[in-house]
Image (tube, rainbow, N blue to C red):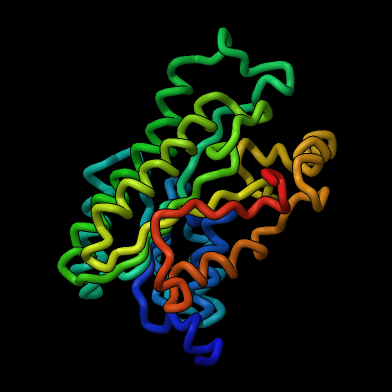
Length: 262
């Protein structure tokens, strides 16, 4: 089988949360570039409109939905509308996430300084919304007896990491276990559920702190490659998991971290 067939997602209906920028935009872009119709969602309406316009200007098949994934009813209604409009939903990237602020490696984010409101919001966005995204999508995918769901976790969910806040690491560890659990239930319906666990990537999460040289250097030192990754370096793995090439992969969290957890 040639590469074009292995990685064929042409005509697939894809939904990406948190898609206005960063990793989410990269996920939407690689799917649209390869012939998928992509529904981008984000709570930042102006940024989402700009992202959709960028892709449409290149002749790609995309649309946007302003959505706060913490609003469960709207999240489920959005997925239902995608199926009503397009007849199916094939690929879902549960990417929307929130930072818990810096960890105690930066002199803050200690146990006694974590605000409960921050904890609750990060758990809601990073974990509960992923659960609800999987639940909303899998209901339709069960009827299709086919589907791919990919959650964006973090290496902070695979190992303790003092550079990120408590709620971030806890939520991402929860996502990884959630993916394994859902993969067990949904396998009989040919729904594959996986997670990507990125290391340090250039994104705007945490207010773009990785653009600050001293912060970037700390994160770069984590990896064997001694650098922070570009979002384009995640696209190949995302396409693999969404395409026929990944047809025997389910229930795993794949680190993409330059060797940070070796």
